[in-house]
Every structure is written in C-alpha cells, then in structure tokens.
Image (tube, rainbow, N blue to C red; front, side, top):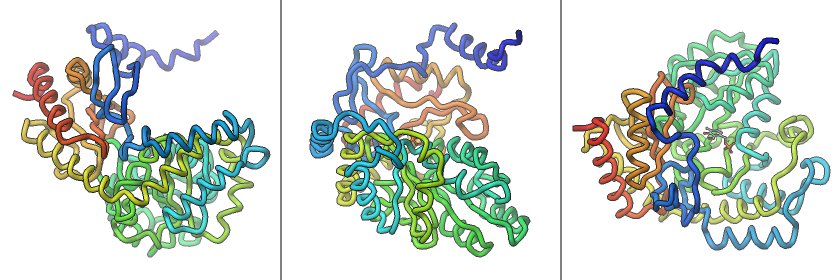
Length: 400
Ligand SMILES: Cc1ncc(COP(=O)(O)O)c(C=O)c1O
C-alpha cells in the first residue's frame, strides 16, 4: 500500500528540524486566557497581542457581548441547518441589513466564513468558459474559489496595473471576465492601486470583485475599505468581507448592487450545503457592524498606532514590508525561517505575540513577523512593543 502521507515528508522534516533546535512551536501557541482585545495570558505570562486581526477591538465591546448573550438565550446555541432550509433566523436577515446599510448597497449575503464567501461567489459566477484575472498574491480562498468553479485562471504580477491590462487584452473579447483584487494584501500590509485597476478592468469589459477582508472597518471614511478610500465603490461589482477581523467574530459576506444577485442563494454551493452561523454570532456581528459605522475616532487612533509602530521599527533598523504604513499590518522581514522562529520566540518570552508567516502563505519565499495593530492598543503599549522588538532583535542578531 502506498502511503498517501508521503507527499508531506519534506514539510514534516522541515518542522522537525526547526523544533529540534529547541524553539517553541510557533504554530501551536495556546491563549490560556484572553483579557482584552490587546492582552492575553500565554505560557502563564501577560502577553501583548500584536498578531490578531482584531483591528477595531470589537471582541469585548459591551454592546456586542450583550447582543450575543441575548441571542443565545432567545434563539439557542445553533441553527442546525442551511440558510435555504431551517437556518435563516431573524438575526441572519438583521446582519444582512446591517451590511447593506454599512456599504450603502442593495444586496448582502452572509456565509459561514470569509473563506466560504470567496469560495462560493467566485466559483458560482465564473465557470468553465470564463476567465478569472487575479493578482498572483491572492489569498488561498480566492484560488480555491477559482479551482472549484473550474474557470481559466490568469494571474498577473502583484499590484502591477500594466500586467493586469496586458492579461485582459489577451482574453477573447466575448468571454466572461472577472478581475479579483484585494484591498489590503495581508502578508505585507500593502494596498492595491484599485482606482487604476478598476478602470482598466472596466475598460476591458470585466466584472470586478474586491476582497476587503483586511480593510473593512478601518480604511475609508466610513470604514468600507480601500474601494471607498480610492473612490471606486460604484464601479466594483462585488465586495467580499469577513466577520473574523474588524467585526470581531466569525462569518463572511458578499455585498453587491447587481440586480440578479439574489439568485446566488439558490445556486451557490458553499452557501446552500452548509449550516448557517449560530444566532449569537450573527447578533454580535450585526451590533459590531452598526458600531463600526460610527468609529471615526478609533480609525484615527489606529492610523496613529500604525504610523508610530512603522516609524519605530524602522528606526531600530528592521526591514519592513512597505516603505510607508499603508494599513494596520506592519510586516517585519526576517532573513530566514530559523532566525524568524528564534525572533518570534524571543518576542514571546518578552511578552509579545506576533504572527510568524512563511511560504507558501508569504510572497517571494519570505519569512515575516507580521504585526497587526488594534485600535485599542494604547500609545504606551506601542512603546512597550518597540522596547521588546529592540531587545529581541539584539538578542537574535537581527539588528545591531
Ligand atoms: C484576504 C482574505 N480573504 C478571506 C479570508 C478568509 O476569512 P475567514 O477567516 O473569515 O475565513 C482571509 C483570512 O485570513 C483573508 O486574509
């Protein structure tokens, strides 16, 4: 019998090699207690959280928690069914209305995760005869959506407007075309030139889908994302988002003004053939989304945090993913995986949690220490973070 696991041998060897040096497994950390959106207990120690997607700090918001408790009491712990059968409760409709109000759009469809939103929408609207033109650094859920729908995939170089245009011009003019972009790319924290890319896509007869997972709540005047900040909301056909980042719970969605959008509820398999979100989850999401509409002060503070951390890390001598802070994600580039893992552990020992990211999730084979800021990090906490980076960086030889 051939062992179907033999294809993982290289990865198993790499992992064992890393752990045999005595480092803590960076992909197996347990949060023993979570005290707030910015502090948890890990390995028995108070740890500042700088590697969550809790950009707007909504996970402990009292109104959000109260809505969740109420829904748990009134509707129970789960729906035990698909949205198209017994799984649509008043709360699912309410969160879809909150999304329509948040984005000022006609339609909103909620999925059980952001992964499923990309999987479902992309695979359903772009089939075998259609072309999907996508940034090569797109999230795995976008690639999986393309694969599920069996569309022709045409990748282009990251954030390269000319490359996008060239690819589009090579596709037969009569073919169905979908351009898939992200507002913020989550590994380096860089923003897409959406204004130009959306124009090029429209000029070449393509529909446009933008995944705003890492920008919702924070970027744009109303927190609608990069499409809002760059003034192209009216030209984007579909926006995909998630509740697992700024909204502070779990779930995914697509909003659109397309007049035939609602038919997706009958034909989109990752929407139809899975259970709907629990009532407590949709209640927390709806409350959080409505509060995010009115969070300009938090957005301003988060920008301050991002600028402070970016400038401080640069001053210490770290190499960063972007020249300027472009989002709530600041990526620190490590020379290799071993140094990255050592630095990650040194930071954890100091009392700081960041994400260690490595290929294939990262572009160009990079190892990154990804810092994601929260609107509730105080100025003092950002100062503490910089002190810890300085100490860990010197201890591991990353900086002098
Ligand atoms: C760009 C992007 N899209 C989609 C997702 C999936 O979101 P979820 O965690 O809700 O499945 C992620 C998650 O990290 C993401 O980064």
